Picture 1 (cartoon, helix red, strand yellow):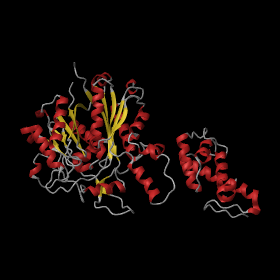
Picture 2 (cartoon, each protein chain N blue to C red; picture 1 turned 60 degrees about the vertical axis):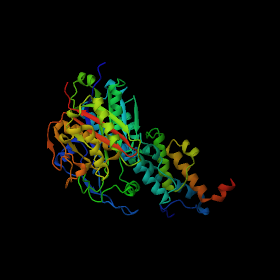
Picture 3 (cartoon, rainbow over the protein chains, first blue to last red; picture 1 turned 90 degrees about the horizontal axis):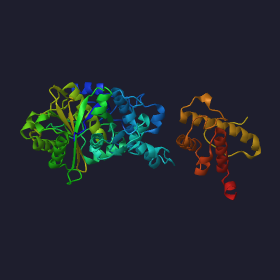
Length: 405
Length: 112
């Protein structure tokens, strides 16, 4: 049986680097970090000063009425979906919406709404919380808003696998189309983690850098948190071609694995297994891949483990790979990371340019791959992987390919 | 002239009885209208004491928001069964006035 191919025809993203894919690419290709100062909180001090904050958001793509109904994490999805659907040129009356899919990922859902409400109750002794706290907080709030906005009546749901959430979501949408369950999907994910209680929780894990994010550098000091999200429009190749759509790239494969090992310590064998499965799913030989958008958090432990996993999968070809971490620029968007990085990887394929790892200072012998330090590199990108590895040992890897008929 | 302030509900001075209650109703109604206008982001002129929720396109979810805002505005608790009955602005103002009065006279409420 001939396998159905899945293509990407629209992409939208919001993060610290911009509120659309053009701005995202401008910053990525310039190797420009988007970190800005965190607000001062009356509640206490933080041991880190910056984050990847989406300035100027929400914008007019989220009207006041919808701002009332939703938390910031869902607003990222609403805005991204509008950009993606407009780029794809999808008509509101496209018959494929009815059985279409919306599959999104988030790690914590409406944390901002919850934190504000509980603060007012615990601290300010307010006798009641906002009546929309439940529907604002629920992790599926964004998926439900996309369903209502675009009239999607097929499989609509949200997955939560910490920092792999978006890659799992996109992978599931890919499988839904590949298997013939549907022909059209909006998929991605988002996170709105910039809230005092949650920042303190990350501080307590001692993995956040005090200054900036330097993945693969010898002097890397941890991750920088970021907010945002992204949405891809996926279509079956057949229906995309039939309507004359412009295809940005092919989503060629998806692999997932679990370390079955430790709550927070990653295991190279688990990451390697997910990459191998993604390659197999895409029918790609390791030598056909030129670029990897790494998980690349910039923590002391992630980067060497990821490097070891890549060496294990790619063998002698590993040295030919460009392996960059765009988290050095937009920050770690947690449950939305895979979605923002999918947008970045599609842009890399479209522009045939590997985005760099910003803030790089000096090589670490434990991370000896080519991380495209500081300067974007025009190069042939036929196929690319995008890695996401999560606390709890859950790994999800997407394989992208330049589209040719 | 009765001197009103907007700092919150007050006990009704006995000697004035009915007239003060009428004036207080007007005042309550205006505050209710202001809350609905700001919660629903409506045009100030569109909301009157005779507006119905249907006319204002206020659905059940909006109703929850309005009740929450009214509880904060008047520092009262609107019980679930009372909240469910509200379908127009006049009814809301009347209900709130009744709650303010029973709050101002807790002993009367307790013996009722």
